[in-house]
Image (cartoon, rainbow, N blue to C red; front, side):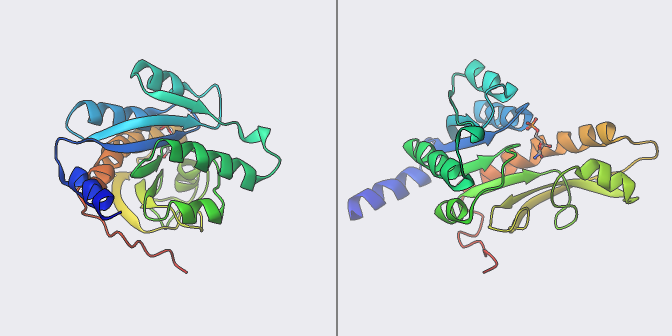
Length: 214
Ligand code: GRF
């Protein structure tokens, strides 16, 4: 047991050794692409698998193009949320990731799932949390007259979009912005801060004891 732990620790400290991650998606996968691109540059991660709850997610194609294993676990196939999450957890664990990244994964996760991956589960959210949790953040930022908007990467806790924030990026809301123009401005920043959060995690710069608010 001690030997196994030591081996793991040494691997984590070895700058040449890529850290295994699993990425969960539901759609386009542009944030996934930002991780693939960073991994092809200088981010020391190995994306062991990309898992989607939707079979037509374009991000699956991006993963295949990059030679990454893909899995589809369709939530409609499961009678209960707990069953879907249990199946998802089992598949993720087959790949033994140090970190699980929600990159546009549009499912609310059960407390049991979140607890299982505590402190190794992060999410990108297109708003300056704690402002605008939930959906339609760009529409709401404009409707509420915000002058500033942005994106956040945070640890996932039981409460949706409420876990400890790792990094945020701000963009202006400009006169005449539509949800689409604002989303595009935010997305550029998402693609910068998500790989940065993963880098900090792997460098051990983030607290291993994210407060789960309980
Ligand atoms: C991103 O804006 C992400 O913040 C939100 O959903 C979008 C997913 O985009 N949760 P993509 O699939 O990464 O292109």
